[in-house]
Length: 245
Image (cartoon, rainbow, N blue to C red):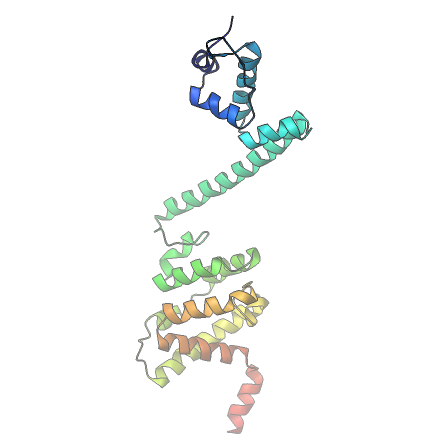
């Protein structure tokens, strides 16, 4: 007894279109045909379809099923490879669930970067945008440093955030002087921040600089420039210079 394409598909729990696709990509051999031209499928075709369905249920893509037939790779090794992929996928989704839980716990907005939900309320929209951009160009250690800095170093933020674009030179200098000790402490605790944002790849520094100039007003950008200069100067040397003037 032979089965038609439709009957074979029904028995295998698939569709006629899928059977024809498997023929087209070489996963299923073409059957013999009756005198009237109709295909005549046998038990071997049904078993093959059930095997493919089983592999698909395990998560194996059709390309891997095809490679399994031609590469000589053992089925056991294929399963080990598949298991590793699934394990990586599970770890990824668990990390996503943890991130979602963090956002829900803090009732955060979509612009809160990963790992910053607990300090989101202390970040301005510009700060959030800056962190999101920086997170794309820093290494993992740099990202951890950014989280720690955001959580523990907010000493001069209010004056900086409230600084108007048309602030006077004296106002800019005053805010920079307040921010410089904070930056100096950050540089001591996170030495990589002395020359650039922590862990930023050199090729990305220009991108970060452009974001800074667009996210903060000119007075704030000048504060950052002056504060960085003051923070990297030798405090003792600066004091001696001041006394000598």
